[in-house]
Length: 122
Length: 290
Image (cartoon, rainbow over all chains, first blue to last red; front, side, top):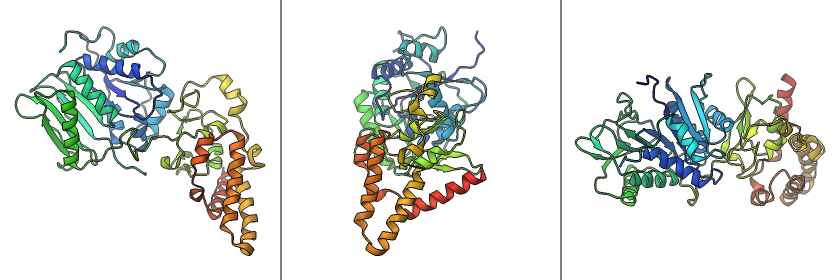
């Protein structure tokens, strides 16, 4: 039995630009939808940051690990900061870069080791 | 902001008291809604039951599920009038998406739909404070009041909406490569890790003074003062516009601002000579204090 708390998963669709490869975005979303894990997804993190959307602060609040599938980690970190939701000083928040990383790798990291998508799930 | 609409929160509820959805339906609904500008929260049996969704002020909720009994609890943090619950049993993905649109309309909630008419594209600078040295070059450079100074006299992005879409010019004049535009195509402006050669690259170390023969505000101020003395005799708004056009032409020649961005600029929306003088004075005072 693994006592590590389940990570909270966030996914950015980057819907206002074409800078994240569409196939990567689609495959990562499909991977999340195929698993039994809950997740939170945003149309566009930049838009949420611009609006100082309170959901960003809520999303990284608490003590559980957070994994974010989005863009370059440097950009994502400071987007949250600019929204008034700075990352904690520890390594609790992990950013996975869909611009450069293969989808399968992103999905595996999001779901954690040994938690591959369940193909038998409806 | 030009567009104050927060994305509507759609909850795909597959937790206790509801049946799970087919995977393809889930993918279709989530992907389509995200592409339309919604936020999507998926709740499953694994979701911590103590973490029931909570509405926030100004953020409408649409809860979707194949409920076996009563719908799930939604903690009402927004006054109770911004939650719509819909049973989606028997509906396919397009049917569910249509149902969400109806529910949103009933809630009177707007949507900043990507690609839609009048949609606001979130294009604005993001500051990397690990790199920023607070030199205020960006504040000097930007003509559109995107930047400001916070209470601790530190540079901040104050007016996102003033930023000209697809213009990354201020990031090019930042000597520390500290300004990012996440939706830009190339690194390090897009947020990619900064390499030493990026810092060394001449294009990243442009001295603003070389652009217009001095600080851009100083230059514009001088122009506006000269123009003002002429205006007192001539009172010609056309000449004022010509001054601005000449200034923009110089910026265009510098290659910092994309031609298509300059072409779209409304010259009348640029700061007035008085505003330029005010900002120049403020900058001079801040630099004197620093």
